[in-house]
Image (cartoon, rainbow, N blue to C red; front, side, top):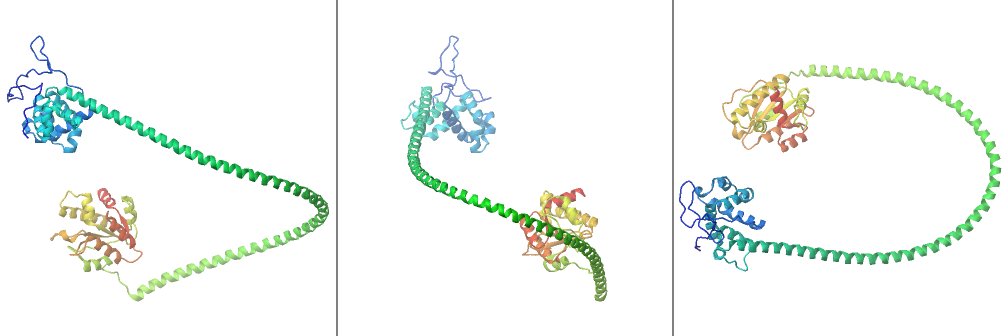
Length: 477
């Protein structure tokens, strides 16, 4: 609904002069006094209750982006670009200061706020506040529109807010008093129950006391009987002591005989130990002869089978059947790694004999130098792996997803096998297939930060390493 221009005791009554942000001379309002010199005296800004101040800032922040750019003060242009949930929170000090210091900006904001407020805005302009209206909302609109008597509306809002706060405090005190009364009643009930328990316990203790007295009388009779038996036992003890003295003499004689037998047994044990040592020497000689025989048998078996060094490794058969190779390259041994990013672990594993290093290509390149193009990533990784293969002599295989494969790649360095997964198969599946193809007992190192790849190859006996271990190893080279 259209609203009349709000009255403001800090705004000029004539049209503002456009240019350099200047406005016309301010008119005298009912809240300003005319001093002796003829200049209007503007009263200071009122002290706003905190809820009213927050509501004023929220209303201004909501309409700030809707203002034309030339109508937004320089100090608030950056605030106007904030997200809605940050504008009122972070720009509150700047918005409050601009509203207090720039009447023209406040008038522009007020026009939009009153339009959104509807009937409530019209009532505030007329200097009245509906009885059912939120006092904080009324005070915020009154501060922005500043109709006649706007200070009284703000004071009334402050009183209402304080009254609500006092009511909340009183309600909280009443609630706490009720809770204390409830707890006291509960404590009394608990005390009554405990008292009943104590009375029952007292009755039980009295009954037990009577039983203990009866038991005490019985024990006294038993004690007298026991003392009589003790006297008899003393007499028997004297008799038995004589018998024990005779038995002790017999035991001493038996002990001397046992010691003599022990000396004989120790002499026999010394002889047995010497025999056992001689037997161990014979067993060691037999074991050495057996191992020598096995070694010579292995040499003879290799000669008998005429086994020549193989030209292809297990990974080559997997590559021929399940992968695309842009260019074949020889391979060497590698090491089996642990689940860590320490390059020293990688060095330890690369030192193992006949090891095979399998690298998840894009997983490493996108983690180490993802800012490059895919072609540059592949070239840099393959070049670095060529250096590792040359240093260690290990078999090195790097696997890339075939979906992004580019034709015409340069030849791979010596010792590095470059594979691309075929259509319908991922690099992860090809890596697991390479690991399964290796014989049991051969150290296989898989470099990938993919948890599924690491878990999968670990189940097949490989050592998974994080991509950072290889990247640090390449950086060190």
